[in-house]
Length: 125
Figure 1 (cartoon, one colour):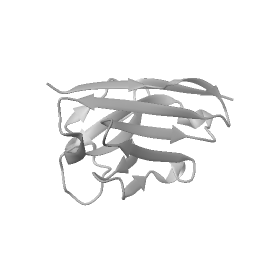
Figure 2: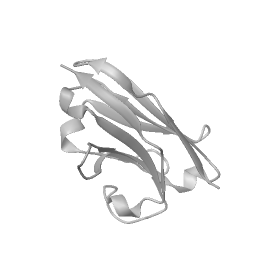
Figure 3: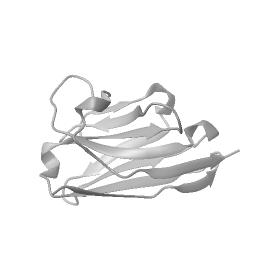
Figure 4: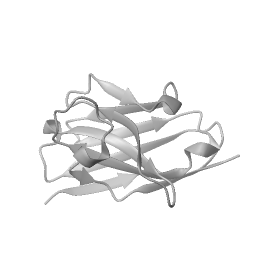
């Protein structure tokens, strides 16, 4: 049984930083590529960042490039999202996800097999 524990969300002022973490158990972590998505109330879940199995390939939503960094530690079964220079429009619930897919691109939500429970990020102006 796969279990996912997300942590790191909270309230921060604009320009501040947060680091989200997501630890997986019950799967072979290195066999999955990882991603972060976010979702506002009443909106569709959108791709934020993705990382390959080895960690050497990353993909980002345009609006977070240069501000967010996705990384992973395969020894700890954990994926991270470092968020710097946060803006009020980054306010959302953030979800980590794991995919066994080998398709081109990491931004298709339906390819992801396992999801975290979500963590709220609120950026005040």
